[in-house]
Amino acid sequence: VAAVLAAVLACPKQVKLRCIILNNQVFENITRKLAMWDNQGFTGVKDASLYKALLSQLRSRKAPTVFGKATPQDKRIRKEINALAKTASEMEGPVDRRDLYANLEYSPQGVRLAEMTQALAYKTIKETRPPQPRPRTEATISRIQDDIRAARGTAPISEILWRAIRDPLVSRRARNFLYIALHGALRVGKYWKHIPSCEDRVNCTLCNTEESLTHILFECKRPWRKMIWDTVEDLWLKSEKNAKWEEPTLGTVLGCCSIPAPSKDARNNVSTQDRLYRILMIEAAHFIWKLRCEIVIDRDNKDATIQEAHGKWAQVLNRRLERDQKLISKKWKKNMIPKTVVFDTWNSIIQRTTNLPPDWTGETGDNEDMKGAI
Image (tube, rainbow, N blue to C red; front, side):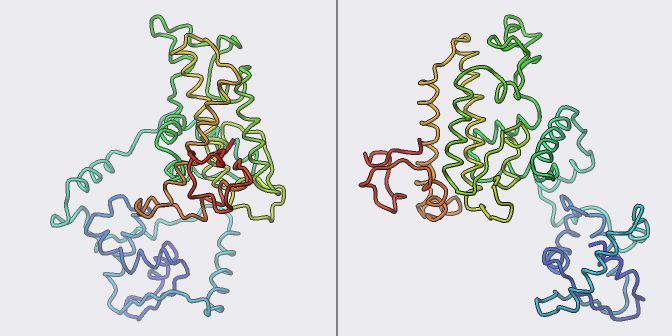
């Protein structure tokens, strides 16, 4: 958007201008959404200041301005754009954009009254009061990014981490768990310190250390905790010949929906198994958290046996498998999952007998040949 605005500013207002845009999203925003955004006061629009300045400059021009989309055949234009982008990326020092926002004379402020709705009014009022940063949330996000960067070399920005937990493959309860965990607001450790008769929940009774989500998921000495992660490792390595196991950390688990699954061969595309990897990671973390809460709060620290934990963990995965099978039906409309996606996700790890048909996606848990995921 800044490049388009700079091009408009560089061209005299009396000269006809034709802009060729490489980015499809920017082209759609300028040609289809700009007028609507203007009527709605650019509420909720990312880079709103740039779009406001662009609209003001376009309205101030006396000659026509035409926008076109670069086609795959426009090799010369693409080559020039890539060369300019490379030159810009190699420039030293911060880019001064003050001139881009200099003239907003032709961009009136506020929302057009005819477009106003209660929801739009609420969003507009909220934008006038920017959210205050939460130190605990920022610390958790930074920890997640550091863990992912250490494992993969790069880390997603915070917006991607928040958007990733809304992935349809994440169940509603697991999504609530991830949301609270990203805010660092789970009821562990010091949370219980000033609550009468709950002070004993500050420390892990088995390890005698202050509890935290990291301790519960990866450090606690409870035997069933290690058993859960060992099962996840076995299932993941079984799913794909190039599958690679990396020891889970807080960042790679809570941020698993924003990163690809690990692979032995960096050139190998295991995107078909990304879904399984994310399901295993999220469900394992959520299950360990739930079972720990049940033991500490409901059972007065009476620990679960490995057999009990394994049975409950198998039930979690098998229910998840059945959920995917049910969502194959077209009656679920936008929530429907294609049969091929369900088959590719589970086929490599599912337990079966010789009588189970090759296309097992229509079979249910009532079929004795369908043994489930584990």
